[in-house]
Amino acid sequence: MHAHAGNGGDGAVNFRREKFVPRGGPDGGDGGRGGSVILRADLDTDSLISIYYCPHQRAEHGERGGRKRLTGHDGRDCLVKVPCGTIAADKDSGETIGEVVEDGAELVVARGGKGGRGNWHWRSPTHQTPTEHTDGVPGEELTIRLELKTVADVGLVGYPNAGKSSILAAISDAHPKIAPYPFTTLNPVMGTVVYDDYTRIRVADIPGLIDGAHNGVGLGDKFLRHIERSRFLVYVIDIAGADGRGASADYVSLRNELGLYLQDLTERPFIVAANKMDMPDSARAIRKFRRETGAKPLPVSAVTGLNMDRLREEIRRGVLRSRREEV
Image 1: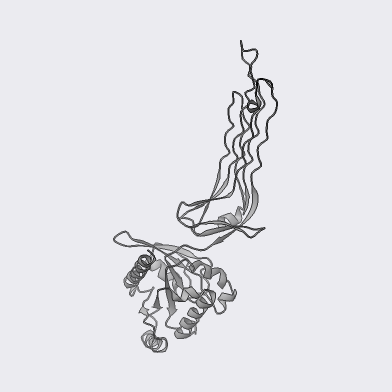
Image 2 (image 1 turned 135 degrees about the horizontal axis):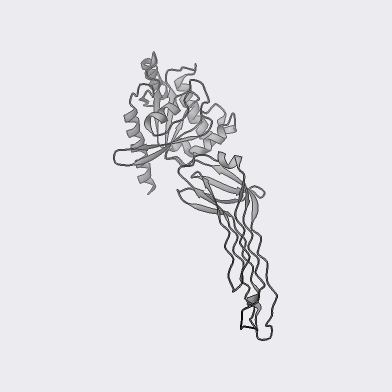
């Protein structure tokens, strides 16, 4: 993103000219402040795609000072809505400017210039007709690299076509794209699970991972960063092996990929959701999965709705427990 802050307005050179006031002194006002470019975290914004197609963000310039010591109007700030969890860094130096995490948080990435001073500042008994003034200070202009690390309480992780999007649609208000082929989800999709007591938990559907994701195979490393802030993980396993993969091998590989990317991820509380229990031989497959991994998966089916309410409660219990432990 190219951020162009507004320039400060120039100070004015003016003298009082009124009837019956033949010797009016200097009264040139100060210039207005230039507008700043500000990032604002917004819960209703879930990607940076709009900025990709509109990379130049400009704030208004401050107005020139006026007569009668009037200060020019300040330039209007340029507010750029970004998803919660956006990190801003100077592209040239690589220095991190800051981040916005909570809804409504703001970060000034390019500060507007200060307005110049008008000639009335130079008045004195020995200098009664000053023409000195100062120009406005140019606003900051820089290229910013934006990186999104999704802020979600829960991250759904799994191989392509495991049914993460279907589960998200079943337990939350999200409407992700669902289709019977891999890599349907190309960007993280957020959903909010709302409970009867008005508890709200944000869940992120992370695009399908593949072996070697921690080294950037596919787009894995770009996807994995979105679960760094998640308190609770849900491993979505295709228990029926519809794509020819083994459920146990999928689980072990997922844990391995997360650990290689960030060791802390394997230490976070989680639940295993054995999806596609509506498929043939799924009951036998889940018994085999328990024997081989020692895990205790929750059998679910996003298609039939099997145990969706129980999954919602397991997520709620895990998230609330992790919130209490952080206090």
